[in-house]
Length: 295
Image (cartoon, rainbow, N blue to C red; front, top):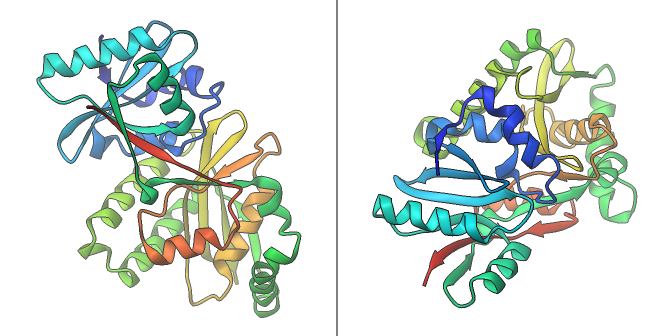
């Protein structure tokens, strides 16, 4: 299997597989694959009608479930052989439940599957986040109404290249308030965000900014996972502006093209505040992802 380092020029190749796939996990968003490659050293290879991924987690060689159509068995065997040649255990991340069942039927009894709640993706209906209809969304509507009342002249605008420097400035303020310098995960998120925004147009990124008195107080952006799922990669707001997060979330959901039935708002990483915030938006489902290992 001929792996090569993932690069920006591979977008068309990757999306030829991912956009028509039914898999909805955020790991397959090309903007994520590219902007996080500095950390995971991501590589790709095509074989047997599938696209395979090889990367490093905490310095250990790992794989992601190949994307494609047809019989996946030969490709899985190739990946296991690749791990043997490298002299490392065969480990695969981001395997969803239905794929676990398929692999168990194809390779009965040889794999161990371990779920990690911290890495489950939160999937929402775009129609829910854009409309906020119903009693369960009353708290969100309250936050939005408060923002509207406090900042009647606010403006929501599509993210464009000329607005990116001010977004980065807001992110620096956010980082200082959240002690990014002492948190490696937040430092890595910052590197990923900068890589994504530098290649804004090439990565099919769609975003928006929330402005009060001409100042950006929140911004967000995302990109497609597949033809029916959109991934919100980043959302940042100045919390001095109460309701800014709820406001930009709602406005951005209205902006996302209607072809996308689902919005993936990624994982909570086991952070209590983030989990509470994501649950408060009433997810349509939690997309469990499993780690696969040989028994």
